[in-house]
Length: 381
Image (cartoon, rainbow, N blue to C red):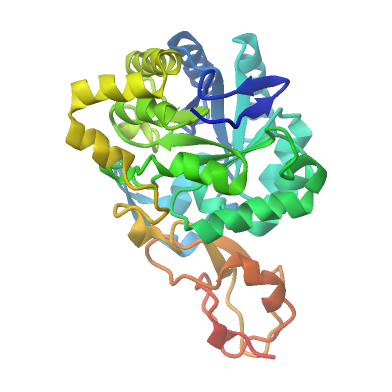
C-alpha cells in the first residue's frame, strides 16, 4: 500500500480509504434532470465524488478536425463537442446536487476560459484530463488557484508527466512543492476506449509515487468493473475513477464503455473489500478469479511507456500548436492566430505547447493553412 495520500476539504484519501470518482462527463447531454439522476445513481452506487466536463469546443479542437472513431462509431467531433457545451449556471446546479448527496464535485476544464469559470464557481478541487497534461497555459491557470488537483496521465511519457508536475510546483511552490501535504495526485490511465486490461501496467503506480513524491490512482477505461480497480488498490492507488452511465445504450460519448449503476456498485464494493483485505490478499483473490497469467499481465513491469492501444494517439490526442485561422507568410504569430489544441486524426500535429513562448512574436516563414499544426519550417525570425 502507498505511503502517499490526496487531501480534499480536510479529508485524506489513501489506498486504505480511496476516493471513488464517478465520471459523468457529458453523459447528461445538457439535461439538468439527467445530470441529477446520474448524480443520484453515483451516490447510491457508492461513489464519493462525481466528475463533469466543462466543454467549449473551440478550446479542445479545430473545426476542421473531421470525423473521429469512438466507441459508438465515427463522430464529427467538433460538432459533437459544440452540442455538449453547457455553461457555468448548469455546472452550479450540478455542484449543488452533488453536495445534497454528500459527494465531492469535480470538473475538468479544457482551456483557460473554462478553468477560470470553474475557479469562479468555487469548486473544491480540479481535474486535468490526459490530453491536456501538456497544455502548459491551462496547467498554469489551474495551479494558480491553489486547489487540490488531479492530473490524468494517459497517452503520455514520463517526461510529459514530470513537466506537468514541475509546472505546478513552479507556479505555486508553497502549495504543490514536495513538502506540500497531498495537494496533487496522478491518475495512471490508458487512453483507449475501451482500454485492454493487459495494457495497464499497474506496477507503475508505486514507482510514479516514489519518483515524484505524490499520490497515484487509476482512471479506468476497461469494461470489467473489478479487475483493474482492485489490482490498482493492491498496488497503492488512493483514487479510482471510472465512467458511469444510466445505460450503455444511451447516446453519451462514453456511455458504451461506462458502467451502469449495478456495475458501478459492484466495483465500489470490490474496491472497499480490497482496501480492507490489503495488497497480498487482494492479489491472491483476483488471481483465483481471473488466473495468474492475466493478473501478471495487468500488473506489468512498471516501466512507463505508451500502452500499445494508445501509442498511435500520441501527439494527436494530446495538445500541440495549431493555426487557429489561415496565416499568411510574413504574418506575426500571436495568441490570436495560434492555439493549443488536440490534433486528432485528420490534421497534422504541431510543435509541443512548451514551445509557445518561443513561437509567439516570430514571423510565419510560409503560408499556414487554417487548422494545421505549426512545424519548425513554419516559424521564421
